[in-house]
Length: 194
Length: 192
Image (cartoon, rainbow over all chains, first blue to last red; front, top):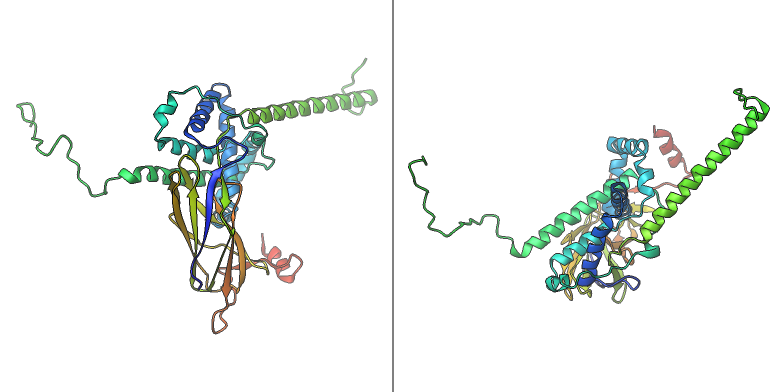
């Protein structure tokens, strides 16, 4: 066996969109919340569903995602899911919606929770947000049940790991005992307390 | 104008055809209008700033090992953005030149990394090579979930084990037979 080979990559901002700074992330979150007042519930949920489907398609390209996909497709959950998806026309509905970039949004929100300059940035509001433009156009691939299921799986896993990573620096050990209000807490006394 | 109830009636038939064509036209028009509005809505949505991968140097990881052993890939990730980033490495399926597809049970350590601005972290992926995996060069990609632009090419060379035990076992590795072959036809016949 050869020794492990190491590669190196850098994470950088995209050239087309705005860079990831506290200000642009706050602007994006504020704009997302503002847009909710202008769209219907069906449009908001449909866009999220389309976003999970897009994530599911992406995760299906990995070995782990492909294994899960094959397993679910081969069993009853796959059959029943597809039956519900086509009879209730969920796929048709989700395929017509612009996909929300759910994973980017989650990661950006996590980054905001860790930003040291958040309070100063919030004082600058309102900050204008860019619009997606042509990049936000509809995905041509149809949204399927299995795409959505795998997208929810990948998103949930990322969410759990993100919350654990946020708590990790200040997480007390599992066996720790905490005494609230100091060590000398006496038992309450009184005639009514027995 | 007289409209007959009888669908076989000459003028009634052509009129109903006209109505059908018109209703189809309006249905299609409504559908396309909705589609256009959805596109407009998608284009007007607020942007979510994202991340792009930029390989530093050679964008390919090569490793070799014998079947039954384990190989390890290591990747250093540097966050050059101004806010925290999350990295979730995942390996694609690996395919060799003869069409054998390997679904590696890769274990990334750590499974996800939260990187502060300017921070560098190392992610390692341990790949147990299945016992019956045919020798050869298996190619695939190391993907970082959510970063659509860019992936790192991976090549795992599986060496033949001493003693000639390098045959594929059906339980772990399935090579897709050519579509016209006898085994492919048998496989199709067995399917319900």
